[in-house]
Length: 563
Image (tube, rainbow, N blue to C red; front, side, top):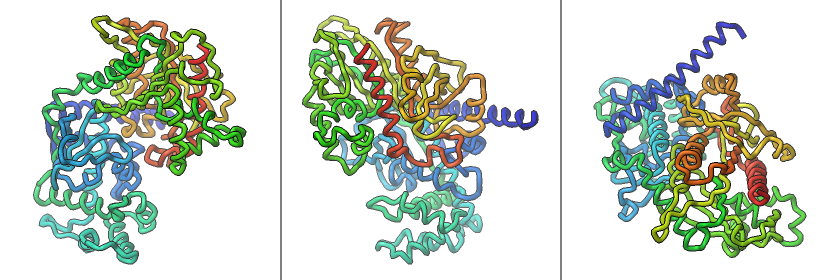
């Protein structure tokens, strides 16, 4: 590679990094302002920065043709019907759950949204700034794509449209179910509008469909184009607003405090508050299944490979089997806390004194009942929310006028991350987290190491992880810079630095927990963003994620039980 080429790549990475910084500064400014018009002057910086970045998730956003995989990724994370709305209002939890409005929950993001009327969608923000950044970035992409449509269908400034648009409108407005012939005719016209082939649209068509809206792709394209035409011809621009209550509450840990206090009250109520505590940030199945699955198996099933059993448990067709494991867990020391605070983080509490370890794959020889571990498993946080929730959980609580400090022995973080060397389902063990866009770095003494997982059947990488401001903003130039820099970066995720900030504040600054608290971090790769077709938009892990998930979980539990 020539010296000129190296300089060019580095410059592109720096431009991209500056673009991300501009986006975040702009989004904070717009939030403080209270409203903005994404396709107006106020949204210009966001649009320009996103088009400069061209993140991997948004594929061909900078081209004239429409980006289909990016559109699907975004639509899955926004409420159904948002493409029809001129007004999008970001709110705090302001009581809509007690109204006649039915919550709309996007398939790939746990957030409550409410369709107020034909023109307005409200989206509840209860997970902090990262959630706002996530939504605004996706909306910017959506509106940029909508104007690609309007440019292709408008003939003149008076609003005259091409024949393809007229035919799409006719198909969308049909009240009867489309026949295959009618659908294929509509797809043909839509493909022309999007600058895509008939085959490309046919391949993704069913991915957009829902039970109530089988022709949803046509619907989305039509409404995106319709509102973009309205903006272009009549200057009637879409508007995003931030409610006064949201602007007042953001950053004050309101939801995190309610969430954490509820957990501590339940610990106290069950006599667990002063026992040794181990906190695990993970999903809501791997710890429970790892401990209790063996006890639910028939004698003939115990010889099966355990990972095959875990794969079966992960399948949607094995609901009865999953219910059986959960029932056994609830009868043997597990408490389940369904979130009601707005954090969308459910919790499981395991009282190991009530577990019969002879029916598990683990040994736990702690003799004294008062020293038996209590394991708190918290579901995944989102970005900055990781700091809010863990910071509140680690604070002491007053019980009958007495301040009680939690006896936290270890904190383990297991999650998904993008990998820069390796592929899907490989494991990453971080030695430090770097916070993107800042000089902040968080070295850690990780209790997990590569040597712990050498015989796990998947590749394991050890090195530095980058905590990014948003996975949807990363492009290849930035990722190559991370990989090739002296930071020795092996992957990227969104919560690691935030968790470490909370741990260090509690253990070294506030003295809320022991300074020698053991820390474990491990991630399994959901994608390799540097490989073509392996962006986050390319789909989920499927069963390939089962093995690394349970390998990491097993090692965390073994260290807890043998510490």
